Image (cartoon, rainbow, N blue to C red; front, side, top):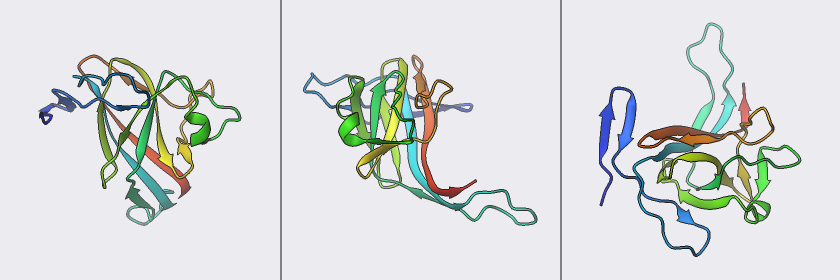
Length: 159
């Protein structure tokens, strides 16, 4: 059954979101009334403010990839925005993944809780956004709410 979109002021709500694909052979998850809607993009070029010029000269490109989902906070040592897939695949908090479309968009239904999302980029997972304790930035899923995110690969961008 396709999801139905409902717009309420500035809050985007979906009646049901599809579950992630699990990495294990556990029984499939149910669709959820809450979750995450987001986009994966690559930023390249100059994103610094320009005096006397309109706009920035950087380019934003959507990325078709997989977004890996981990339960809770994830911290890797040494601290790096890149985490080898081979290492991430062994992590006990690894839970599932979702594919982006050709415009980099994804949507996934998840039970309420804290999640870490990383975009697959070649042989690594990537997220250049960290919390004060050195763990990757997390996303909070609230009951009955949709959280919007944008995962950006900023390795080739100047700010």
